[in-house]
Length: 586
Image (cartoon, rainbow, N blue to C red; front, side, top):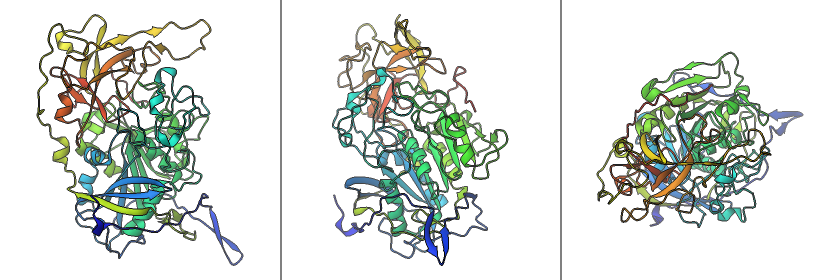
C-alpha cells in the first residue's frame, strides 16, 4: 500500500544534450572542467563534498530498506534504498548502486549480493534499482536493463546472437516491433541510461536521474558515488561507467560484458574490477559465444581494446605488465585477481573464481565483502555533484517525478541470505525407469553425458550439430539441433520424458552450449538441462524451488542468463574444484 505520510514528490527539469566540457565564460576566458581523476581514498586526508541534500530530513527510513518509485521520461521505475543505522543528515557518506541481473527483483538482489548487509559497518548508502518488466510473454518476471547493445542488434559486428539463440518472445513492449533477424534483442527498450542503451549521448535516463534525485534528498559525499551490478546488471554497470565516468569514483561489474561490437571505454580514468567464474558459459570472460547463443566481448578486449574501442587500460593510462592484485579473500573459492599494470587513472582489475554465473562464492557474505572492499578504496575529488566537475557551472538536476514510498521493510541479513530451508513438500521418487536428467551416481542414459553445472553434476542429454555445408564460412559457429535458452517450456529439441512424472513440477528442459571445453559453443558441445523457477530472497533458490526438481537434485543458479531460473543438479559443493575448468586468461 502507498504510505501517504512518507510520499515525496520532486519537480523535475530536464535537459537533452550531453554536458559540454566548456560550460561558461568568465571575463574573456572559457571555464574548463577539470577532472582530476579517481584517487585512492585516505580517511586521514579526504575532504568530502556534501550534496544538496545535506541538512535535510531524509525521506527514507534509517536502518531499514525502503521501497520507492519514481517516474523518468514517462516510465515508472522502482528502487530499494537503505540508509545505514548511523546515518546523519550532516555527514556526507558514500553511495553504492547495485544493478540486478535479468529477471531478478531488487528485493532478491539486495539480499543475494550482500552489499546492503555491509552498509551499517562501513557507513554507506545502499541503492538497488530495479529494471523494467514490460514483457507480456510467459516465463517472467522480465526485469531488465537496456545496455551494451541488448536492444540494438545487429551492430557493427553483425547480429548479437546466433540463429539458435533467436527468441521472438524476448521482444519487450517498449521496443515496439523487434525487426532484427535473428531476433537477438532481449531486454526492455526503456531509457535506463541513454535512449539506445549504448553510447553516451542524451544521458538523462533513469540512473542518471536517480543519482541526481538522491543527491538532492540525502547527505551524499559526491566524490564517492559508486556503481556495481551482476549479469545484465553487470552490463548496466559497464554502460553506466562509460556514460558517467566523470561522476563515479569506481565500478565493479560482476559477470557482465558488452555485446560484440558495442564495447566502449570511459573518456577519463575510472577504476574497475571485473569478476567472472571460471565455469561461466552464460556471459563468458574469455570467449565470445555464450551457452545461450549470444555474442559478447571478452574481458581482455574490454580492458585492452579491439577495433571498436581503445580499451579501459588506455583510458586509465595503464603501463607495464599485468601483476597479481591482492584482496582480503585471495584463494577463497580459488579467487585470484590480476591488474592491467600501473594505472594512474585507477586500477583495472579482473578476477576469477571457481564457479559459474552467480555471486562470488555463491555467497552474499563473500560477494558483498569483495565488492565493497574495492569500491570504497576510491574517491573522485573533482566531482562536485549532479555529474559536474570542478570548473563547471552546475546545471539543474535531472530529477525523478512523482516519487512515492510503498513499503519499509527489514533489511536483509547475511544469515537470511545464506540459510538452507527444508522444502515444504518433498519430491517423491519417480516411478518406473529413470528418465533423462537423473543422478550421475546412478548412471546416465546412453544418450547422456555427466556434466558439471551450477556447482553440481547432472545427466544431460547430448545434442548433435547440423553437418556444415560445403560453402559455410570458415570459422562459422556450429548449428545445434536444438533451440538454445528460453525462459518457459517450448519445443526446443530436448527430451521431455520428465514431463508429468513429478506432479506439480514446473521444471522444463533447456538446451545450452555446455560441456568440458573452455569454448563449448565453437567446439560443438551442446546439452539439455532441466530448468527450474528460482524463487526466494537468498543467494540460492528457496526450498520450494528445489521441490520442483527430481529426486535429490536441487534448483541452483549459475548457468542461465535469466536469474529467475536455476537448473536441477545433484551433489553440490559450493567450493567444488574442477580440474577441467578453464583458467582466466589475461
